[in-house]
Image (cartoon, rainbow, N blue to C red; front, top):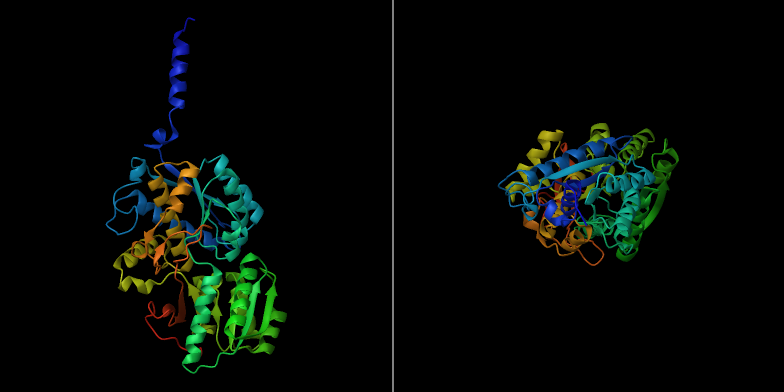
Length: 414
């Protein structure tokens, strides 16, 4: 057989193409998909998330003197210093749009991992697509407990879920009762997607176990134009604690409608979501001084861990805001994923998954008040200790648990 020059050249090109993927990745960039609502009613969440992920990517790609995975040195050392490149996709708070965008990120943009998604209902479809393509997915800020219980191999969540958050709330109620405070009745108020439904189920279970009476359990349609009928029910129930599970626009409408109908809740302990967002407090903060929200992040931690304040300053320079419960979890979601890719020394989905399974990150090497990051067999980190934050004087202050608190709770609310 006689080979001409063209055959030789083609053969050489083919042999390069057949080089192991890991070898070719040594000098390549590592492409990670980030999927959030960048338009529509939740667009501000997506904009803030984008700044959080860009802050994390900056820390990974450049050299910083922080005791945080990948901060020291440039890029991913396990892949020859490869830099992380983020590709953002807009799911518009639509689960089916999320499904399509996840598939596009994987098949067209060739991402090796995906992080998302704010709404838990979107995380359901995105994680299913990732599972099909064997692409690791980190649920950065989704809190529905059912998400990690679906038997998925490529699903991971470093942050707490709503059963963990709700337990922190009921621990706080029990502690207040021991101090002589009257807390007997609860009113649950939740939207009708997986986030609100899972939150309500967790709270109903804990109320029954701890001996609290639920006098109202009101489910409303997400993004409803009116909450008048629902607020009338809340006013009639007049519970000791109102416990809303609502995104930002619904939370604002709830508080405005309460004001219009003359209903003043004795106390509000919220399941985060809209009640951690600056937009809500800009709109109605003066109507709810002393509201309590659960969270993952406490800026008060900066007093003990100066790195937290410095990284917060980096995020604030980009966004004009301090880290909150969402943006802090988004930041850590990318750090955890990139750390796994670095240890895997590969952009192969199965190898990254194995590295995520082996993750054991000390809490001191995060910006969170967590004891560690270590995933159980379902991909959930059970060491992500929640905190309770109270809104007073125009800012949030950590009031629980005792080991994280910097102030006593003002109870009842002002």
